[in-house]
Image (tube, rainbow, N blue to C red):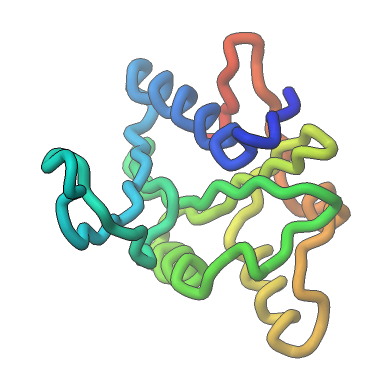
Length: 165
């Protein structure tokens, strides 16, 4: 299921949103997309219902929720090539995942490698190790080999769901 270039940023999120609807309907989980904060500067001159503004730096990750009494928080990332650059994970997202992980939540990333059409769920502990190594001057990305060894490969089923729980 290759994503088109124009839709690359939304492909993974649309699959996750569809899966989350299924989880909600089946009573499995309640996982919600966190809206991106938007700072309104002023109404658009020709149409008062339209606004002029900009996206603000968020303090959250893409999704938060609960499943069977366990808090869930995760970030969805799409990437090309054979690694995920740690620069794609801002410090505030890393710290959010770390905080929730340390309090018992299930914290992870769902990563889509578009060139290989592969999906992975990688837990915070692996992300934490990668960040620690990068801060010590080592590699500043997580190579596909780490995903293949330490993450869970996810697959889209026939109904278009990406079951990650």
